[in-house]
Image (cartoon, rainbow, N blue to C red):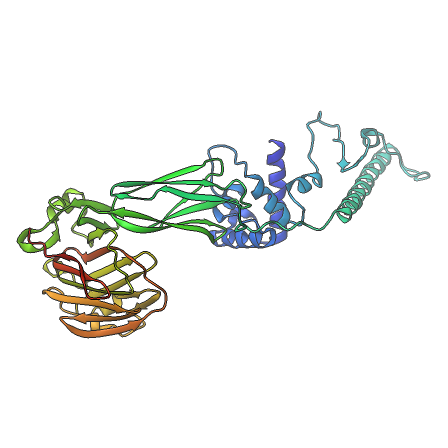
Length: 458
């Protein structure tokens, strides 16, 4: 066992004693989450639950795990020490010595000579016992000496601790200048690889992550400086640098489409199915995903899946003052799916507007989004969005100064206001349970001027 391994084991023992949760081998994920919160709160250095699991051996590593200095410092501060060095100075490291010879007991600044430990102890005068009794006296003397030595250790430790200054405040992880995070290639056509340059060596956080959108999250090694990620489908992503549960920096990645492109998502993940003429078709003046292409992409069409029709570009339209109109129908009923949805999404640079339509009787599944306003069918009456969408219908979404009116077949069925801006429109997505068809798409600006019009009659 190395010196650091020994100290880590001592540290683990002291954490167990402090928490009184039993042996760490019996701890659950909930326990490590709680420990992460406690250590981070006391030390002001964030340690993720996964890192703690590696330290405590709950997550096995290929090599002997040697945590970063920040991790060790945080654990030491949590235990009441100034830092890891202070913890080591106040701990005893046993030395390798021949069997039967006691190791030298030391404290910071003081040493008990080995000769004191090896000298024979005699019985108290006048005890009147023979050699066997004398041996017992030696044993009692040995334990008495150990008691005195331990007492000296405690006194020395107290004196050393009392002379030290108060625990210095650890800088907050969001302190200006603690990190660099820049995007150098963040806009392009799918498939697209974005490049991020970063420097997090000065962050007093053990685990730093990059969130890439679509629930993708990756750990950033401190010794590296560049991170890349490939996006397979068109979208507008908010990318975040996160440490200690706090967002330190944000930027966006715009993955563009060449006209309309398709994809599927299911329990098998998100899969692209190509652009116009490949994965999606415009036969008969309508746009729809190709079932053959979906099946060739090895999507299990015997199970529930969703098909998406995307168009991502800079439309130059303010999402808070615009009008969007689309005519569509769902094909899900043809496959005897009982509850199915058609989702119309307008993705802005800051937020989105998303309306979800379902067949009658299934409106509890809905989840409408208007800027920061999120309304779920379980808690709101959204029956206006429960419509016979297996037939052709026209939906118009009109936003005027962040007040939205939804029209179904030219009749207003829902109104709602929001306060946080959607911003410039970056993309349009039509999503269907199974598949759906789109007859036309029209987008107008605040003045009513038609900005984008697609009739799919090529």
